[in-house]
Amino acid sequence: MADIRVPKLNNNDTEYLVVEWLVEDGKPVQAGDPVAVLETSKAADELEAAEPGHLHHVAGLNTWIAPGAVLARITPEAVPASAGAPVASGAVPAASSGAPVISGAVPASASAASPDTPAAPADVPAAGAPVVTDPARALMDALGVTVAQVTALGLPIVRRGDVERLAGSAGTPPATGGHAGADGPHGQAGEAGSGGAAGTHPLSRVQRAVARAVTTSHGTIPAAYTAVKFDVGPLLARTRGLSREVRRPVGLAELFVQAVAALHPAFPLFFASVDGDRARPAEAPRVGVTFDMGQGLYVPVVHDTGSLREIADTLMRYRLAATEGDFRERDLTGANIAITLHTDADVILAIPFVFPGTVCALAITSPQPEVVLGEDGAVTTRTVANIGLAYDHRLINGRDAALFLAALRMELH
Image (tube, rainbow, N blue to C red; front, side, top):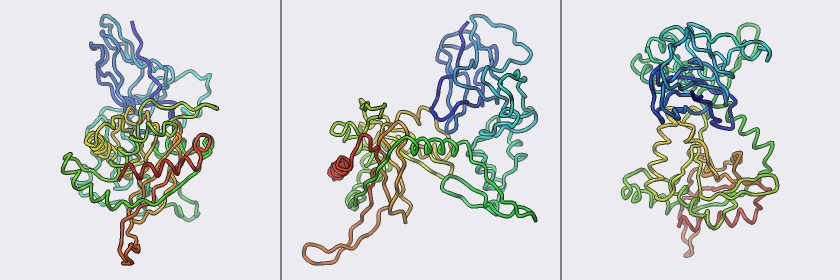
């Protein structure tokens, strides 16, 4: 008999939600077969069987489970299924019977329980009650889609795309009284009833993960910032030809990922991590790129920077995943430098936080026209963008940052 234990999927979460069993209880599996889907604060990950045999569920569906807890067991032979599989150590029921499970919602009873209180049996949602992911829930709030409507879809897991299709087919108008903020739809806080109590908006599970990362960064990393002006007109002109050449969309993001990765041999400390009073350089560049499509901030990682076509392929896949909130945990781990995109038309300056585990974050802002005086005295225009570097001052100084940005400008021209 072998246990399938939950691995540590990321550094932001202490528990994950069991959202789907891919293999029924008692059914045979082969080594490498995906058996279950766990949802973290930002992604969904499949866990695989390490050896062949018969799978027996230990954690209940729609329960929270901690890293290291037993998710399932594999036995050489089939064993009759027990009436109600036990919940794994570290698992917490995600919802009471009959209600759809909202990813990111932890019952009050779970948080209030004493550590010495025996775990109650897992509550099993009624047949047809779906798991609703955070991006789907945010869109439901924005469009006024009801729980009854998504339950009627008959889906085990409701994702953002399902809500979009439902709202489109039903002609659901956007809900009033709210606005879409940078990290997703937010209801306006206002007067609630005649008593005048201020309303509240709960942070989504994705945004809570962002909050933890920002807090850790500001509390542990002494960051500094340097910004320079880049003439990006020639780059923008090149993107059209490059898009035709690689048959993929190529923009500033793709070109900057390629150029930043190319600087790794000359600037290894910019791709390092700080461990006490020591720096640990990375063997290869792995560039995280920010995506915020209105459902929260994601920083997926470009691992393969060998060619512009590969970079363009990866970033296109990540754009689609950010729209659906459909990342895998492996997409979001392993970055050793970050590029933050701030390309809304009027953004001229952005100071990113340094992501924990890295020492640099490069900010790309919106291209802007600028009037300049030519060498011949004629007035002309060019297209510029402020490119900034936030850096861990324990390892990198201002002179180093300026040299890195100068080398980056040369790499791009």
